[in-house]
Structure formats: C-alpha cells, structure tokens
Image 1 (cartoon, one colour):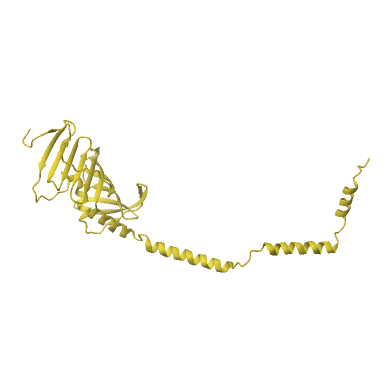
Image 2 (tube, one colour):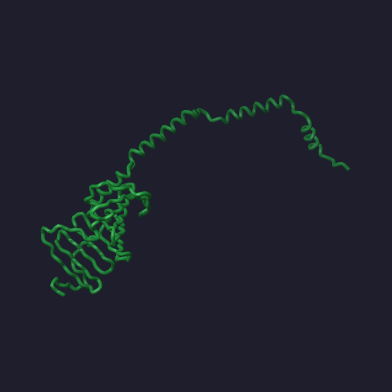
Length: 254
C-alpha cells in the first residue's frame, strides 16, 4: 500500500519537479545583486592604504635605527664611562685559586673613595675617605682595629679590584667575544681586554651598562664579578664607628 501524502506536501513535490518561472528567477537574481552591492565597503583605496602602511613602517625602522644604541662598540665605550665615573658601585666577586674556591668578596663603593669590603663572613674593611679612617672588623673574635690615614693619602685599589683600575685606565682596542649571555634578565655581549698582565672579559647590555666581569691572570687566580651600577647604599655603609660588642685592638698589640 502506497503512503498517502498530505495536500500541502504533494504541492511542494510537484513544484520541485517543475522548472521555476523565468520571472521568479529574474527577480531572485536582482535581489542577490542588490545585496552584494550593499555589502561592498565604500570609499576604499587598497593601493593607497598599502603604500601608506609601507611608508609608516619604513619611517619607524629608520627612527629605531637612529634612536637605539646602534653599535656594540658604542655600548662598550659607554660601559667604560660608567666604570670611570660612577656614583655608587656594588660588586660580588667569586674567586678561585688553583681550582679551589675562595671566600666571596662583596664590595660597595662611591665616587668619593669610600669603600666597604666584606670578605666572606670573616672580615670587613671600611674606608672613609672624608674621615681619613679605616675600620677593620674581625667578626669571629669580634675585634676591631681603627687606622688613621694621612690627610694627603690617596686611596689605592684593593688587590681584588686591580681589574677595575685596569679597566678604568684602558686605552687599547678590545676584542668582541662571540655569543651572548643573559645577566639580570638582560642580553649582554662581551669584550676581551688584555691589560696589566690580566685577561679581562667585560659583559655589557645594549644600554652600555656593565653587568659582569671575568678576570684571569693567566696563572692561578680567576675571578667572576657581578656588577651593579649606582645602587642605593645605606647611610651607615661607610661608618667607621666600632660596632657594639666589638673590642678595639691596638696596632702594637700582638
């Protein structure tokens, strides 16, 4: 028995079997063309926009090349200026002698010649240039030694800071090292300086800020130095008053 279709469904099936009227097709085509015309973006000039964007991109590139520290050599020269004319400087020095680790040295200094050097947890030496005083603290026995400097005394670099004096006086040609390092979250590039019997590698970021130094004398001593330029220093950093709990020793005492 064949299924019986409803009158409405029967009319739809008959319509699908016949070609639509020509007038209906023309009307549908006209409606489609009107919708496509309305959908087109108005007042667009693709070629002009592409040209404008290319010009803007070129201008940005030129400005970037002009404003950025374009040369690594320039960054190296800026780093030398930083080390020659700093306000404050903090150094963490890790040393090895004949392959054996030595106590870490921490140095804080300012441009006036004041300096504090902490050698591991054992010894601290404070130089106050304005007071012409040197305070040496032996933390184990809790002893303190105060030394008065002549009024015309000139500060001399500590043995562990010979490299700093060498860099500040450097006038030769440095050799750029291959590769790069990330120090303090900044990409740095290195230069090698052979000066005063030392081979020094200075690592500098793109702004010309020194970030690290490696020193080797070619024999037994090597140093790795972390550099912080112009850190804020506590007011008591260079205080030469004997701390509470320390006993003062006299220079002529055994």
